[in-house]
Image (cartoon, one colour):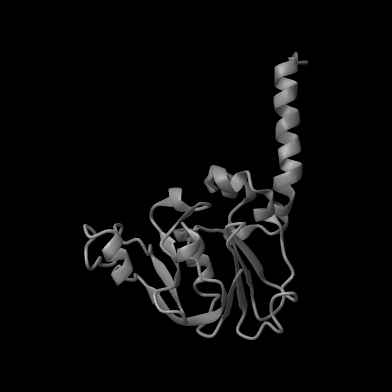
Length: 200
C-alpha cells in the first residue's frame, strides 16, 4: 500500500473538493460533445475559477417559448447557454465577452445569418482605435471570426469562433461573443436563422 503524505492527501482533497464544486455541473451538461476531462483541459484559468460558469439554467425565466431555439449569453459568467426548440437539448459553452462595458450590448436580438468561413472587416470605431489593423481579413487561420459565425440582428455583433483560444473565458472582444472553434462548429448547425438571442 503506498504511503500518502500529508501534502499528497491535501492535494487529493483539493482536487476532490474542486471536482465537487466545479466538475459536477460540468458533467451534468457536458458541452459540445466533449468529455468533461477534455472540457476541463481547454477552459481558461479565469473560467475555471468562476464556478457560476458551470451552472445549468432553465430557459423559462428568460424566454416565453423555445420557438427556433434560444441562446442566452451571460456576460458576467462568460458563458453561452443554448436550448433547442425540442426543450430537451441543452448546451453550455465558455465564451469570450466584450473587454469593456462601453463595448457591451445587452438585450434581445436573434440570429439573422449564418456563415461558414467568414471574412472580417473591423468597424469604423475599431479602425479609429487601431489604425494599424487591416481593412479586410479573408477567411482562414488569421481571421478573428474563426471558422463559423452567427450574425445577430444588431449591426457588427456576432457569435463566432476564434483561433486564439486564450481569449475564451475573458473580457477580450470588441463586442462580439467568441467560442472555441469546435464549440461554434457544434452550435452552428443547431442554431437556425431566427434563433432567439438574449445577452444579460
